Image 1 (cartoon, one colour):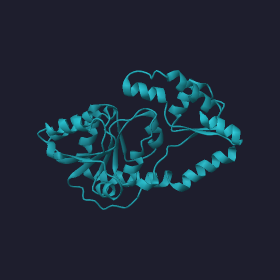
Image 2 (cartoon, helix red, strand yellow; image 1 turned 180 degrees about the vertical axis):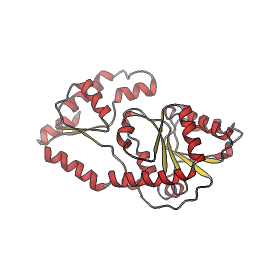
Image 3 (cartoon, helix red, strand yellow; image 1 turned 180 degrees about the horizontal axis):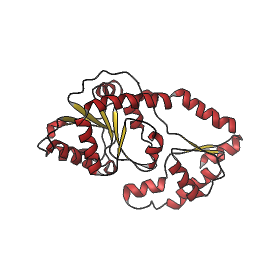
Image 4 (tube, one colour; image 1 turned 45 degrees about the vertical axis):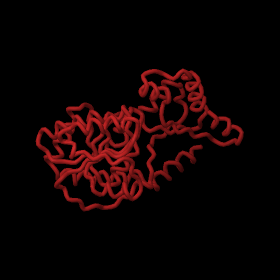
Length: 274
């Protein structure tokens, strides 16, 4: 909570951006709270209760903060942040014959990549042709690779390792569907904006924060269970024209709602209040 002291010493307003509840994230990842969780709670509450404004990704995050810290008197603002360097917003004329699906991100157990592979195994058994690209690295990389190496249909899965810059842009130019295999309830994954900007149809785990960010948009298909994920993939492969249609809609949505002009207006609104 050093920001509280700095704001006090500099005599400036404090805007707190609540990215994630650290203790809850730690418990989700490791199954228990960290031994210093009381200290985290203290500093988290001190930072939030001394803020002049709080930015949270969703109403669900706001509700958590109010319940945890009891600070409903402080004005809340909702937005998720993206990386404009990863949002080219190019118009692509792709061929929609062999459909390519992309997962981009870290390889941690909570991303549930094993479930993703299980879903595509069912899709394979239904006779569909496709390619699945797993882009990134992480603690579970070798584990996932070993699983894939044991599959009779492993030629349909490509593990690229980490890609960025021009290499990643070139890969996205050849993809059709972006996948968010899992997300925690408070997260607004940057990859959702990245997929959208690349004109991809999107399949995403349904969470309250993701729904609040994209609930009014077309082209985003949400699932809660493995059977729902399989059904969604199956639907798209049987209706390839929808993939093209949805990809254009996701790109238009982020171009209109998550651009530099809108972010500037968002912060100007906060500054004018302060």
